[in-house]
Length: 351
Image (cartoon, rainbow, N blue to C red; front, side, top):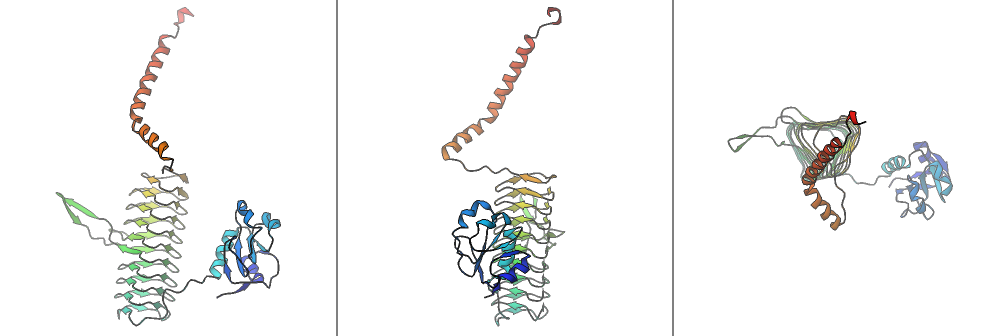
């Protein structure tokens, strides 16, 4: 367990310390649950009501909330970002492997750094390259000539197909499949003919890929995930997709083939993105939205229908089915109004 005193944290965060710098911290917690030797944060003033009762040893806080803090405080510009940095320092998450387990199957042609740690029943295939300080969990499969760069962490039962490249400091959670075949088929008189997917997947540095997520290899060119991209659980990214740096994709979102997504984009949960379109930098898509055409201007886009009381939803659904009929009636009424207006307009000679 790591321990830091408040003076050390203040220096690391470039924070203003209010309290005893010798106080030691060993863990993070919420405002409501924190106790002695724990650090918490307040980033939104609407949660200030919980501040008065906190038992934390110290709170990461903005200057405008300092007067309401009953315990020691570290004043920072962004408490949530500061909390993330402290949480990394105090992280108690275990390794996915310790040493190289005797049951691991490592091909003699693979290049494995001596500092790598490989769990039980993991498979490292021919020509694969495993970098320094890599952790590979139990039952994980690394395909032929795949490259796992330094400081990556792969949890149990991850599948990395042949020639996939994973950038340094990337975390991949259990059940993720990187480099499976894209959905490429030709139809010959009703029979599907498979098109071999000969591209690969290239994942940038400092990415995180959630449990059960699948990223398909390219058909001819490569599927590319940029630097510092975060992808939630159960996301499907199809072949030849390109995702720009620092983009975030929430759970159950699906992205169809050959779509290009820009940098700093954010996708809410359960979005569906059409194939062969482009989404520019800085776009935010709210949850359950369906994107069917390219987006060329940054901003927030939505199409998902929020839940309503069942009776209200049933009424609206019935009205929606009548929309075309209502449109035709409205158009007929507009024509009648136009005609009546024309008939009642006085002629010049009568004025």
